[in-house]
Length: 274
Figure 1 (cartoon, rainbow, N blue to C red):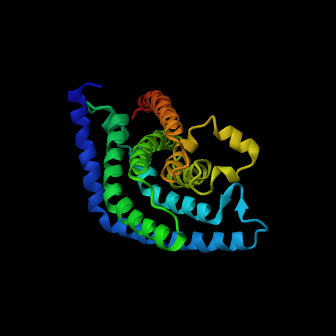
Figure 2: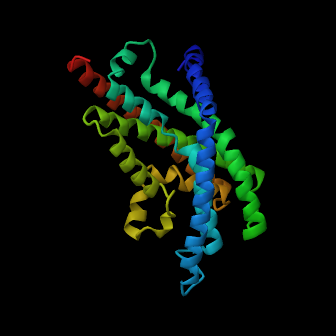
């Protein structure tokens, strides 16, 4: 993509940032929701570990488990951005997709750059304030050391790549809206399946061994588990490099699939008289 073309799509990134700040009160609601979720997770797993015959469950202590799940909540606003899903889904549902297709822009790139704007807005409005509170809790209540600056920076890069992977999957799932009007139902299935397989709801080490083996060859763990493990400093620098290379590979593959599948969707829209 040429530099002039990139500048054209950066306008959608700016719009994504402005949209994020326009709904800053929604961010406050998300913030409160995350605080309550973190408290619930803490007491839930405290009860689980208290009733466990061992201090370590599937290779994780109580402190590590709570740290992982809390960080998963902290990372969610950055990574799990559903803009492409709702934008494409509503354009199909409302019949606006045909109008957007005749505009001199690539629709897929438009939604991607808008999502990146949301990433920046969520970083400022949600990630920064929540992470400050969480790291204070880690240090003073759980006795967990705060991640070092290099690992925080590597985490942010990995989370950025994870956001693009998630966006591509979102886009492809939203394409199904052309065959069904159940956009809300698609969202529920999508959020549950991707949240589970990515390791956002539960560490992948808790999965059955056969499912752990399968996830190694799928893009889902690159969405949540990889960034979280980097922030927890569980990977060496060499392992981080390999995981990020894999994230880039998945970005290329999934965005290519998203564009190819959307090209087929466009043919369907045209043939239907859209």
